[in-house]
Image (cartoon, rainbow, N blue to C red; front, side, top):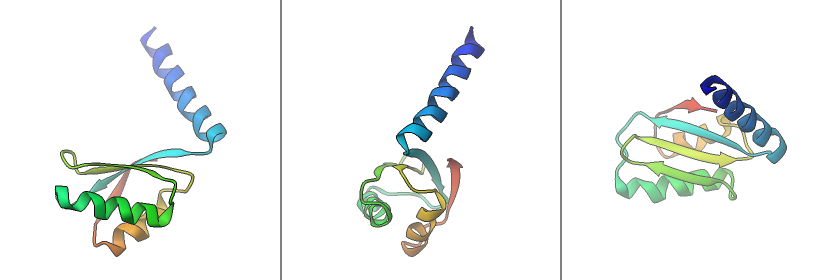
Length: 90
């Protein structure tokens, strides 16, 4: 039963991505994120996609972005703000 729920969750995720058009992606920031970085990061992500939903997690040093665009398109915004990041989830 557990594997069926896990499979259903994966199917839902793929279905929502392709039929909604939006993708949830998560980036790992190599430097420590401080509370004063949050608005700077959010502004940088919104410069790429003004409709993106951005969640900055200071505790885990991650940035989640819900957007129509591909994760690679956000690398430039991170780079412009001097953040070194990697993709955790796309």
